[in-house]
Amino acid sequence: MKAAVFHRPGSVTCDETEDPNIQSPEDVILKVTATAICGSDLHLYSGGVPQARPMVLGHEFMGIVEETGPDVHHLKRGDRVVVPFPVACGGCFFCQHELPVACENSNPKNYGPEGGILTEKGGGLFGYGDLYGAHDGGQAQYVRVPYANHGPRKVPDNLTDEQVLFLTDIFPTGYMGVLWGELKPGETVAIFGAGPVGVMAAKSAVLHNAGKVIVIDTLSYRLEKVQQLTGCETVLWKNDRDTITQIRELTKGRGADVCIDAVGFEPERNIIDRLKATVNFEKGSIKVLDACFSAVRRGGRISILGVYPVHYDNFRLGQIFDKGLTVKAGQVPVHNIIDRLLGYVEQGKVTLEDIITHRMPLSEVSKAYEIFDKKEDGCVKVVLDPWA
Ligand code: NAD
Ligand code: ZN
Ligand code: ZN
Image (tube, rainbow, N blue to C red):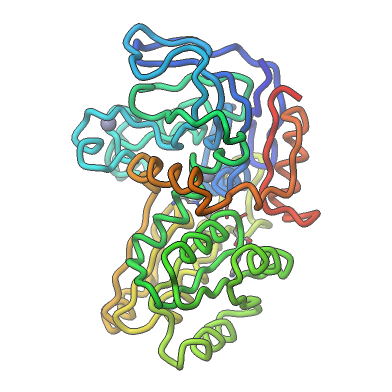
């Protein structure tokens, strides 16, 4: 089959690879009909999340069940499904406690403190490397989906792939950013990042009857897009000081009730050793997170959706304490809210496909990553067709 294979930072190519096969009784093999590139894929692409061997990427995908393992009871061949990006068994301690992103059975490796990033075993993701369970991803013609009784959701025939594809990740992620921030009707939310996740957070804030939605980005074309899609106010980031001042001016000097970080860690690209797949984290930046601490009001809430792969010195604990802030971060437990969000799409309460700017064949995946990474050509979201 054809698949998007990560070789090393900066190098993703469409290769001919082995077809996946059923390995456990609860597996299904999915014929992928649509798949997208995510900002999270860019952390692998940049080397920020290390991956030493080649692997198939992709955690935003949907398709048609091709083959089922003997213990799959919820699905049959021919069913059309979307698949949450975390791999979760449904039965372990964490899955039973609504933490599918910490599933003990989807990532058997135990990374001790000497191993670096993760400290306990658990937490598998599709197409996100050895650190997250070594599950091949869905930027491919076929993908193996483990624990298929628990993850995939059937979608109604009257909805197109593009209408439901983003239920796999970015819509639940943006929505959870708002839930974590406990946004109340009438309150102001400042969303840092007008990428796909930031746009979905803005749409979710509108669904929650926010009083004011402010979106911040360094790219004016992305701000124009999110303004057009959600009617939000926008702030063009030039530096942290001006941005914080503008947010205060828009909030009677108090600061936003909720800040959502939909940007994450920004490595300094010129210091990435693209051959060794390493990055000097000390030279990366957490300036957006720092700005959230300053732009939120006293007693406010901060949701961190953007990915931060390691520890940082000078974390603003003093500011969190002084202002009495609540901070919530993490991979989003898609399983917990996907059914509710599918309902919103079916009822026409929200549209998701309007953020797609690029539709490309999987065979052009190298170019697709380059365009999305460099934010060229007005790119907001790329959807790949594995069969074109
Ligand atoms: P993206 O790269 O397309 O978007 C990031 C946006 O941040 C870009 O528009 C960029 O211009 C903007 N930006 C950069 N510096 C900025 C600054 N100083 N101020 C304001 N904006 C700035 O990526 P995306 O797909 O929207 O994803 C955003 C983040 O969310 C990524 O870190 C991704 O890994 C993460 N993510 C997390 C989860 C989760 O489960 N927590 C799920 C999906 C994505
Ligand atoms: Zn994603
Ligand atoms: Zn589990």
